[in-house]
Length: 54
Image (cartoon, rainbow, N blue to C red; front, side):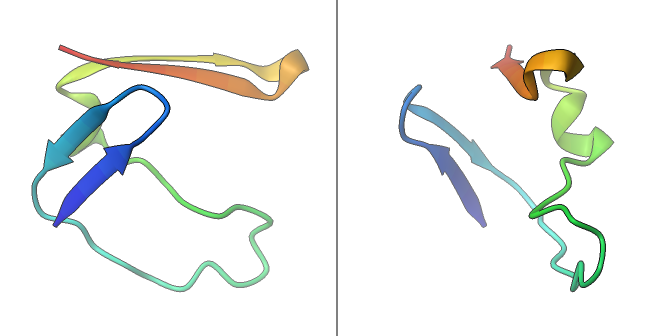
């Protein structure tokens, strides 16, 4: 599958697993297999994140 983040023109191709996240109050999870290719910074008080793929 290909994941594209249009606002940053980032494209990642790889294997993805889809599971229902009912009742979790989240829309998606980013796995360590993708995170292994970059840096994730989460700013909790602003509810924002930055993902930089290397």
